[in-house]
Structure formats: C-alpha cells, structure tokens
Image 1: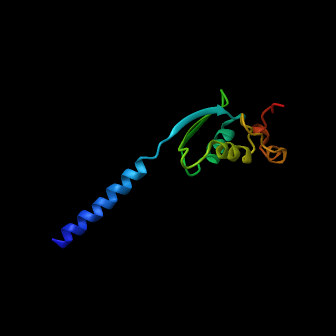
Image 2: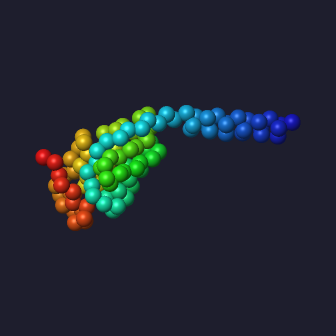
Amino acid sequence: MKNLISLFGILLVFFSCSKLASNVSYITETFEVLGNCDMCKSKIEKAVMITGVKSAVWNKTTKKLTIQYAPSKVDIMSIHQKIANAGYDTEKLRADNKTYNKLHSCCKYDRKD
C-alpha cells in the first residue's frame, strides 16, 4: 500500500511539472533582419536560439525573420541584440561596424543609413 501511495505521489509530481512546462505561452513576431545568403540564414537563426525561443526562420528573399518566443522568458529587444551581436542589422538595432566588418564577404549586405 505504501508503495502504491509513493508511486501515486511520484506520478502526481511528474504530471504537475509536465503541465507547468506546457503552460508556457508563445507569440509569433516577424521583423526585418538584413543579410544575403544561406550562411547569413544559418548565423541569424543560430544567434536567436536562446532560452525562451521556440523557433526562428529567416527568409533571405524577404529579409524577414519569423520567431516564436515566450515573452515570460525572453524579451524581444534581447532577441534583436543577439542578432546585432552576430553582425546583422534589424529594424530596431544596428550591428556595430567592427562586428559587421568581420562578416564573410558574401554576407556583407547593403546597410541602411
């Protein structure tokens, strides 16, 4: 009987934790990120895969990043900062010149003033 009660307690804790983890609410946003090629795509998508980000897809034709993230775990400006830190300009942040200049030649997009 004690084993059955212990097992029930363990299952209760397990399902409670699983339910809490699934209660994370994600939102989707799309915004401009400048870049040129598949290497840019890889670097941009990798830069934003931080805690709280569920998915990120950058389209090299439209220059748009669509991202699913949990605002309770990460704020959108932190995501923009990660992209800028990788050398890419977003609609909210500009990468510093030193980082931009380190990009591979095919990745050097035309910068907006």
